[in-house]
Length: 224
Length: 72
Image (cartoon, rainbow over all chains, first blue to last red; front, side, top):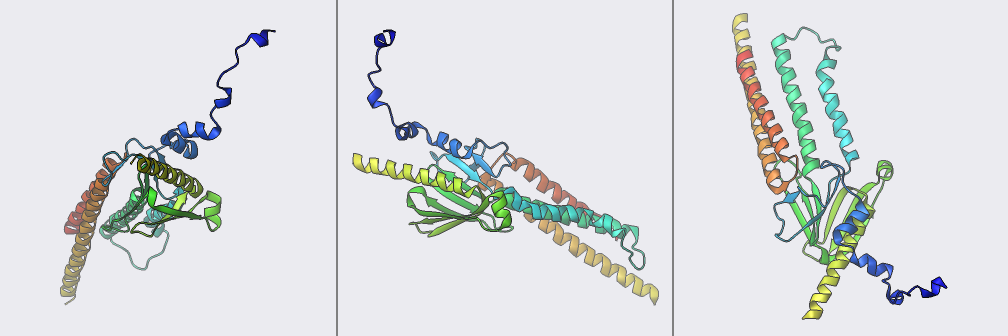
């Protein structure tokens, strides 16, 4: 009896489907939903970074995701760097014919430590500044090849035609990183991102953003 | 005669040391330039620290040149 008195919701038949609810999520929320939150500025994936900025950014452009190479790709140079630091100490155990004068030892050690430091710094810089940036308008690959070479590739989201990923080999499979290839209809036929962590999530984000851009474009054309 | 050879070798040593350390100094200057350029292009949390580290490296390279001049 009590149940009969309860008013029936008038809009039961017009409750939004899951798709419609999904559409209400902002792009930021969708990206968070897929990628999660970055724990540190030194993470391989930064989601909606507050501090991050780049020179070619448009005024109204918003950086959604910044991706660096997977941390595991740094392991080889970190091991080499640590080994290089121990080389002067190890040299004491190797018998050398004749005797090296102390002043030479000092100079050679200083030079060696500087070279080791420069090696580590160069490798870190290459990792830190080689980034893939996904904004709400385009996807950008900034690549600092060596000392003074900068390569900048971009593709507008709406121009993206096909996105593929490739995870091959033992370590890539274990740590889930690999190559993402973005084929575009623009001047740059394809952009390749190497050693990207979670390639399938990156693909998903790019697909969502591309679809959003296509919808926006369609509605703009409809209005005209 | 031996004294002459020793003097000659010392001069050669000094020249090689100087050239090596100056080349390294130029290289460390290039690193500073590189980090500054990268930081202009990409602005992130640790840019300031990286620029400071590159300048520290440059100072260490200058110390190396001075040590080569004084020691050799």
